Image (cartoon, rainbow over all chains, first blue to last red; front, side, top):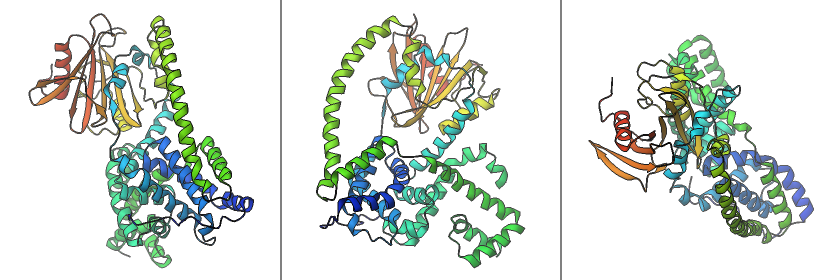
Length: 202
Length: 274
């Protein structure tokens, strides 16, 4: 995504609060789930994702008057989310997370580990783990590919909408989705195999 | 449309971006070509798996917080910037209190826990995580006596290699859990009775900070050793090492020499015992 992408500037004319809120509630708030999911994939951290979504809505509300009512509200919100993400988190995520060995050592040496028994929810847990697998694969995509892939595959956005969100040409969106898709496929191959997708390909 | 043209168009088709006339032509080709149909289904399954994630919702608490923050900000653009900073401030204050409280609680918990069986300690922790459980499975890695456990465990972990050499130990179960948002897997096995002799642990490299453990060189591999006295009379040895993009660790109720021997065999720097 380009560094120079900027959200609209805050408006000097706030409008009247109750009407403004009612309209914001109607057109902007319904996108919260989608924004939250994407924020989760981008920040890979629940608390940061919540902060990012909150910042996005506050910035959006602040500059709601500059939003052109006929245009795509979802793309507008996602653009603010993207800019906020770049401003706040991009440098931070490069550091990565580490698990101190001490935190797992206690698990390693605990007798409770042996108390594990098969249960009826096993399969549900397992399916959940497989969804986790997809999340993990998405989260491991390089940032430039991750956003367009998440917007297209998870949120079902069109190339054009993604281009609006990212402030770049459709061609760029297509090539990033293409490369992201290949990386994703590589990561999920063992999963696909396990679910018989390979048989379908053979 | 021929196969070559179809393969070029398949991504746009799956993404719903193919213009109508081309889409019809592609669909016509799809109906008559089994190979292209498979390619198409494979692409679609990738998208479908991602689309399944679209059920995730924003927490109600966040929703409420955003409503309040926006409404508090009212129509004033300047005020709208405040609530985050505000919340940060409150959070810091809360954190200070929480730390004080946590320290007191931890001291009390330590006293309570010392008097309880150790099993209780881990329950809440473990319940937070996705569990992959396979009960009592006799697992021999090379012979593949329990491929189900092996596959499920590796798949859930995103681990493409073979499990470490567990010899012919009986595997009691395994689980994949998340620590700091990262995936790690734990395999528990024992040799005799209810005693756990060896526990394995697998995680992505870089996610496991081995600082504080003592490095030991064995052939071309560096192992990191820590001893803990809390696990049985013989004490517990933990040996960790990085290899092939993953971090492995094993805990072993034994002496350091034996623990290192297990680790060396698992890492493949020592010959495997028949």
